[in-house]
Every structure is written in structure tokens, then in C-alpha cells.
Image 1: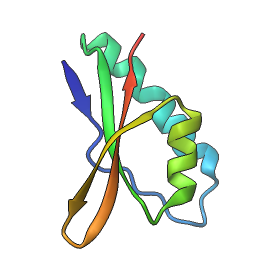
Image 2: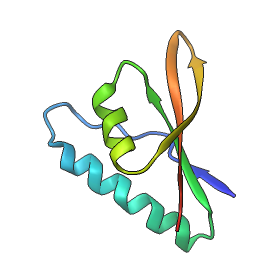
Image 3: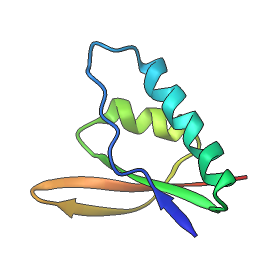
Image 4: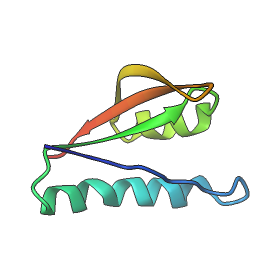
Amino acid sequence: ATTEIYTLSLHDALPICIGQQLIKFAPEVAKQKGYKKISLNVDQDNPRAARLYDYMDFKTTSTMTIGDRMYNHMVKKVN
């Protein structure tokens, strides 16, 4: 089973460590709920977020278009 992070938006003025802490917490919650992996979509025009997710061991598995924007679908296995 997979759970998905639907929305995580941080104001540009906030330090990236806040987003990192939120993303670190998500696998813990997913594991407690019995999920094997979590996934998210990241806008291809947001390389800062993509680098964070990559650093947090999310792997791009596909790309998709939502509206007029291109997104990478990223998945992380929950240990």
C-alpha cells in the first residue's frame, strides 16, 4: 500500500530545514499506519524541492502533466 503526500507548501522565506523535518516525519507516520511506501509529485520548475526529496531518498518513477505543469512522481520506501 502507498500513501501520498498531497500538499506541502512552504513560503520561500522559511528555511528549507522546516520542509526537511516535515518530510522526515511522513515515513514514520506511514510506517505506523502500515504503508510500505509514500509518494509525492514535485513541479519540474521547483528544483530546490526536487533536490530536497532526492536527498530524502525519494526516487522519480514517472512524470505527469497536471494542468499546464510538468511534475515528477517520486516514491520512497518506508522501512
